[in-house]
Image (cartoon, rainbow, N blue to C red; front, side, top):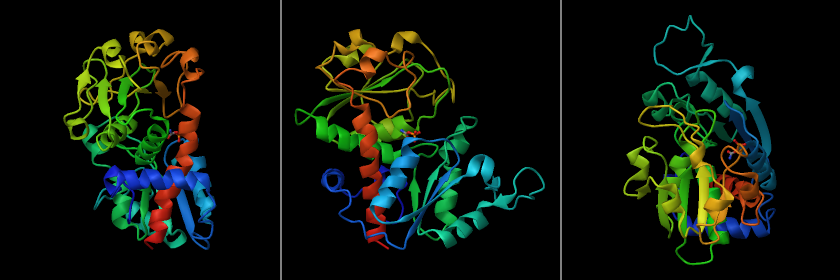
Length: 314
Ligand code: CP
């Protein structure tokens, strides 16, 4: 594997999940694989879990780690060809990507959707430019349209926690005060289509995700109906794809203890960070069935597996 851009880069999901679960038992088993190699983590947006877990994963493999916050600290990058750069941008991605490649053996990038122009966001300008111009592999740490490290984490976490062969998994939209990208939901939806699960998406009318991700997945606009008999409830807000970037705070979609009682004693999942008592009630995230911390812990093993596979291919 050269790049990890989306979950399409996973050649065999069951093998990857099993390998990650084995790696979790002995995280230092490949501690010399990355010796004398460097990973650069470039952040155009904030992070807690992705930054620390990817750093930890690389350290477990013996790598050196360089972290750079591009927003605020890096030069403002130009992505268009032939631009007369006499306005706000200071450096073209053509140079920037090649320069970072001089210092790093792998580059991992976080660059969210701006939610201003759907075509721009869905063209994945930042990630695809780095993939085009860098001379080393690129890892997606959440791009405009996907968060494949989170989705791999979620596959690992569901596999570890499932009580039956084919669990019912519900992805539920929830309210949020800010407009958020569709990236986490897109990758989760993509991932669930590769897993053995009864998968249902529930959200208000108008919050349909892009059909390129949802394909034939059933959508139930009645949240309480969708939650019935669920084994896993994955909660996430996203802004509208069709009315691009429109958000909603409809409190009737908040996940409560009462709603969780409709499920088959479901495990509660969220990628975090989460706005308590807006997205979910305290009682749900603090319940015995909440596996959000375990999920966050698995971010390390998803990242470590991805970086390991790239190192093995170098
Ligand atoms: N889930 C996730 O990506 O968390 P961070 O935004 O904190 O990295």
